[in-house]
Structure formats: structure tokens, C-alpha cells
Amino acid sequence: MLLLVLFVALSHFWLTGEVADRLPTAEGEAMPQRLQVMYTRQLELAPPPPAPAPARRPAAAPRPRRSARVPTPVPTPEMPAASASAPDAAASVAEPALPADLQPVEATASAPEAVASAPVADPAASAVAEAASAAAPSATASGSDAAGGEPAGTGTAPQAFEWPPSTRMSYTLSGYYRGEVSGSAQVEWIKEGDRYQVHVDVYVGPSFAPLMSRRMSSDGAITPDGLAPRRYDEVTSMPFRQRRASVVFEPEWVTLNNGRQVPAQPGVQDTASQFVQLTQRLLRHPELLRPGQAIEFPLALPRRQDRWRYDVVGEERLETPFGSLPAYHLVPRREVASRDELTAEIWFAPSLMYLPVRIRIQQDAETYIDLMLSKLPEQALPVMRRNRETPP
Image 1: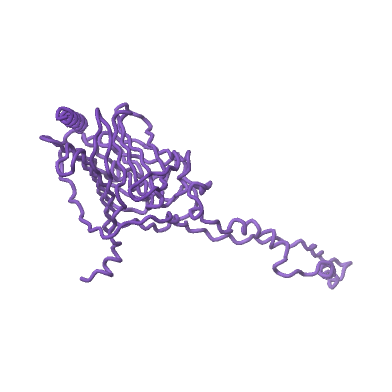
Image 2: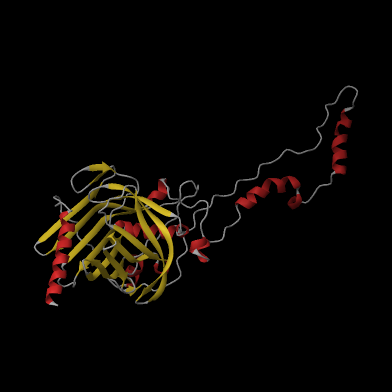
């Protein structure tokens, strides 16, 4: 039994060392200081929040149409001027005036406008999966929607979006690599004004003495179009060694871990911020959660930047410590796949504000870790409410 435990421990050490060796040591400024938050309540299960309604353009005024009355003839020497009004008088007798709401010209002109301005029922109240519309972003969405804003081409202005308060999610880790592995993980979203941080902490083995730990942190700004990372840092720790990797984001360039600069693509995310950016996109556009739909955005990893596409597989029920709940399964797909690349499948739960309740990171069928939410998410009070209710 002792030999088996030792073999598994050595296997874990070899795996974490192999992964860490792929991350070259990053030289440069220190990581941003981690923001501190006090979590005071649990997020309870609830129906999915309705998507914010876009501002509706006012209906265009109906175009006036020319009257169909007979033109008045021009008086001639043979025709007295007084007789020129006779056709008009005859017309008024032959065609009696109708009430304003029954005028045929007005009804014909305003009917298309009335149809265009008719209110549309909110699809989020019935079923998220059946709420697709022709204006929904597609797999090749571009423009502002690529960064998390409104779908391109709708002609509507985005409404103010209220981001969730700071939230911490705790997971139980299981997996397999030449034997079963176990541990814990945590995803933390911190919001402070227009600044954000996202931290993903993974521990293989007991948290007080892990065989390996990895922290992935994103620091940046909250914009009307979504998250705008400024810096991403990744730290992998194990006995007797540590590896770091970082990515720096600027308006025009993204500096990868090896110092190479690539042009910054609109809406680019990093390994940690993508989880919250996806949650934001689903909160704003729940109609995306239909099998066959996809959500696409550029992703900057420590060694490269390219576009990632998350395909919506469908709805599944997950068994959690706090009950069974439906979640939507998203599977990543890259433009250029790498044989040894790690991918993360994600399950988002509408009843928990579309937060990720399960994350499966996989290299192949025999090498993966699976994170399952272990308790209800913890949240901080919104800033305005906390300032109002907390005495100085």
C-alpha cells in the first residue's frame, strides 16, 4: 500500500513538473496585488434573470399620401370662374368624409409601422432554449458583440448592464493521470468600481500541503463591451520549483510570455477572464444557449493568441451537493488545434446567474481534471448597499 501511495505521488510530481516546464520563466514587474473582499451571503438558486431589453427605436411617422380627388380645371374664357369649384363640390357629395380613425389612406400608411412597433414577448420568461431570434449573434459574430456588447446589425443601443457583485465559487477536484487524483479549486470574481480581478486557484492533493498548485489571475477594467484585461499571470508551484508566465494587454498590442508582441484583437480575453466574460455574454444574450449555436472571441494564452469558439452542446442535469440543477454544456473549438493542448469544457447554470458549476480540463481521455461546484457561491454585498447599510 505504501508503495502504491508513493508511486501515485511521484506520478503527480512528474505530471506537474512536465506541465510547468512548458511555462518559461517570465521576467518583469510583479503581479498586481490581490484585492480583498468579505463574502457575507450565499447565492440561492433562482429562475434565470431576464436579459436586459435593448432600447427600441421610435416608430417612423407615416408618410402622407396625396389625395385622390379630381384636379380642378383651369378656368377658360368659355368657362366662368365660379364653375371651377363645381367638380370639388360634386366630389364632396359623392365621397362623404369618414372619421379620422377610419380614413383609408391613414390605415394603409400606418399598418406596416404598427406591426413593426408591436411589443415582443420576453423569451427569457418562458424557455431559454426556445428564445433564439434572427438578430441573435451567430458563430461568426463580429463587431461589438465579439467583445460582449449588443449583436451587430440590430440598430439598437446597448442598455446599462449590472455586473454581479464579487463572487467566490468553490469546487471539488477529481481526475486521472496514471491513477486517480483529487484536490480542490476556487474561482473568484472581484469587482471594485470599474476594476476587476478574476482568480482561479487549483490544488492537487490536500490544500495545506498540495503536490501542485496553480494560480491564474486576470486584472483589468470593466467596460460597456465587457472585460478588458490589462495583465494575466500564471504561477505553478510544486516542491522545490516554481514557474511563472504572464501576458500584458495594451490597446494596440498583446505581449506574450516570451516577449513577442501580436496585434490586439477586439474583445480579447485571457485564460481566467474568459469564464466571467462567458457568464456576462449569457446573462445578456440567453438566446445563445441553443444546440448548434456558438460563442466566439479571441483568447490570448501565454504562448499564442487566436480565436476560440465555444459550441453549445445542449442542456444537461448535474447532481450537486445542493441538489440537481440544469446546466448548459459548452465545448471549446480552436481554429488551429494542438495535439498536447489542454481544453476546458464548461457547464453554466441559469439558476445560478449562468455561473460555471462544472469545469473539465482535459488533455486526452486518460489525462484530465474535473471541477464540480461543492457549495453554493458566496457573494459580497453590492457596493452601494454595503455603503448604505454599514455604519462608518
